[in-house]
Length: 380
View 1 (spheres, rainbow, N blue to C red):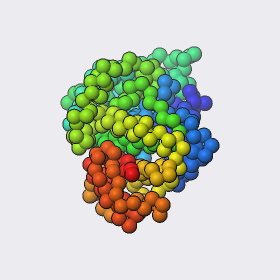
View 2 (view 1 turned 30 degrees about the vertical axis):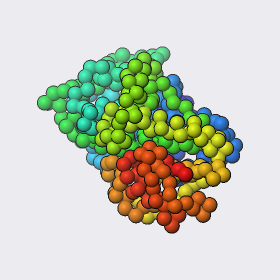
View 3 (view 1 turned 90 degrees about the vertical axis):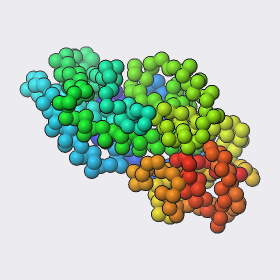
């Protein structure tokens, strides 16, 4: 099933993950909390994995691709435009256009999920031969796994060659390329939304009931695809150098330079340190869903972990296309997290920035908690 249907049913390919249910198109926040509560009660030591050696695409690629669901009209218009300008690069193979429409649909999602981003946050204008070869290799595997126009047992070399040529042509850095000028603005929007999604996903994994697992190399951005792409050597030297410099970086600078991946490493390091320092809170503490209120209540997820007098409130954004990039500070307006009576304190500390927060009327203002970074743990 996972190695056939998941390469055919491409409505939103991010859902086609090992152990996933593609027909389940998202969860409500209430359902998310219910699943966390169930895990807390019944499987408190279960593994929380977002990337493994066997996933179809990395956690950061999925975080980008699910963002497509937030921009349906832009996605629809873009698809029409891209299919029109790129049709000239298709080839006739056995009276059919190669690649076919469904394969082309998967390709565009894959490009958005993996497209390189420059240091200033702009999408790369020239991706280079290594990236093109990675996408060609991925499409070869995807088409063979789907077993529709080609397969591992009966490879259709003409179809595969036509698809590889199609990839090369639409990514060719040329003034005659009509695809890239219309693709890059969408890639930039998806990259920003995906970064926010990925950071939120990382913090939820590190603080929800269960035992978080971090696959090799995912301490920073990792835009890898299915094996063998996700088994390339990890440059641990670079990661060690990045880690050694984290303490000298201001949180706001990490956000400003989000494309370099340090912000994800910073989140991971601080959250793991906090989790280690308060192991009993995460091992045996209660899980309390919290309800946001205000103008953008639908755009954040929050819960508390509590053990006796110790507590921590986790706040992350969702649906950030409604807010803008980055989703920090006053853009949150009057949105607040409602605390239950047994968490009624006057002050808290946000662990990533060290800022002291005033808690009034049993409410944490999201604009205060997310004043600098688009994620927070507020603790006693």
